[in-house]
Image (cartoon, rainbow, N blue to C red):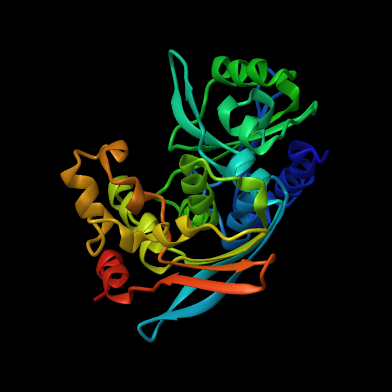
Length: 314
């Protein structure tokens, strides 16, 4: 069985070796754990964002940035291809672990989750486990974890702190914007998991989403980054069997569809959990190829007007 932590280790080692070029910074703490700053005190870069996304997906994805258009206006877009989608998306990239200690809290994603089995239900549903002496975890935060928190993460993962590498970027940073767009496929698999679908029927996946402009305010950034996937994210799945549930996995299925996410987020008291999951975890459009019949199904559409309103285009 593949080890997503071992697959990801060369990615983070390359980030460390190229840190000056990538405009990121790595630090080794007293317990020998490594923290790679991708946006807290550094500018970051497009290439750093691509490597961050590939690390979050357990080394099972290719990622590239191209220039696309929204209502005729050019913007950067992230393009993904994903092997072993259940493992890459749910077993690694899904933000399924809330790190909480006396001194620190953050949402965590990345292959280290597979060692910690956070949450256990996910790894049971996809039939995956990992064994590795190294672990890579990604934290969405504007604060660095302290040594006690890193010791805690390493202990839960069953490794020495010296084997732990932490990637960190706030959502209102370039890498933060890129990594949210990189979740466009994982949104769909998360919804399928919640539906109780057989996730291992999905063979391959691709995704495309614009990269949100960097905002000064973290809450505004939460809005624009999510809108990229909700209103202009595209997902293509190759599956062994079609399921009618795919028709409902687009953002247009939500009664809240049609307004910028920040406005909805603000009305919900900035509580992400109060937002309709059909909006929060759904892309704009999905195409499904059923290998058993050769049929193609397509649902949803792109909405340039709302995304440009969200971006604050003048």
